[in-house]
Length: 285
Image 1: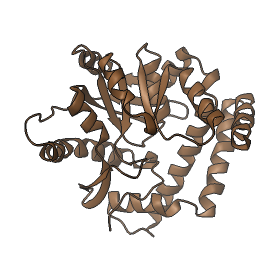
Image 2 (image 1 turned 90 degrees about the vertical axis):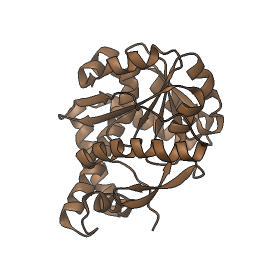
Image 3 (image 1 turned 180 degrees about the vertical axis):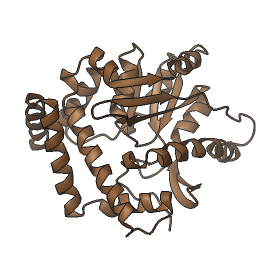
Image 4 (image 1 turned 120 degrees about the vertical axis):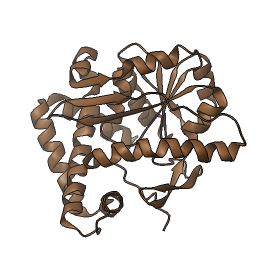
């Protein structure tokens, strides 16, 4: 109850603020969070491995702080979600590659989008939703039903629908209806499905859910990434479908196809490292 009330009060506060002031407060709040040291080492470790720098390098510290600030701005965006119209969202997020999504859906078996925790990924899915597509995202189920409803309604205001990790079997029904399911591939939120893969020259525990769903359902697997390209604007790319290997044993198929997927993830993470907002340790030391 208290968590839900807190979210609603924070949402009301942010909605009442002009956007520039909301971003200033969000940025200062992120700086304070960074100063506490909470989750900072996770972010610094991610950066140091990607850039092959020491974790105490000043450049790693600078990028880590920038990631926290970008994350704070993303939170402000989400809390203002209901008052940002679909047309305004289209202006804020330049979408490239929509034809790849259309072609994927022409096959009639649905589309599985894979991405990473780069940029405002909530807005990325919502940007597709305001184009009129049914798009579902996979999220952790919170203990508070009212808190779940708060997040659901915020997403739903732009056509972004929610699937919880305890109801993943529903995914196949949505794909059978030729809908879209978005699944991150840089962190296993359940803590059960990660497998070791080479990632930026190190072993990391990465989930294979998006791939396995595509293989099992016959859905088209497509990458999608978003990043900031201005103070209030974003650039979003929907890539071409991954040509999946379909013949062979299950474990071999997972290994072969993840080798096609991982370089795509690495490319976008490397290019937009200041927005890789992954506050978890995925590395197998």
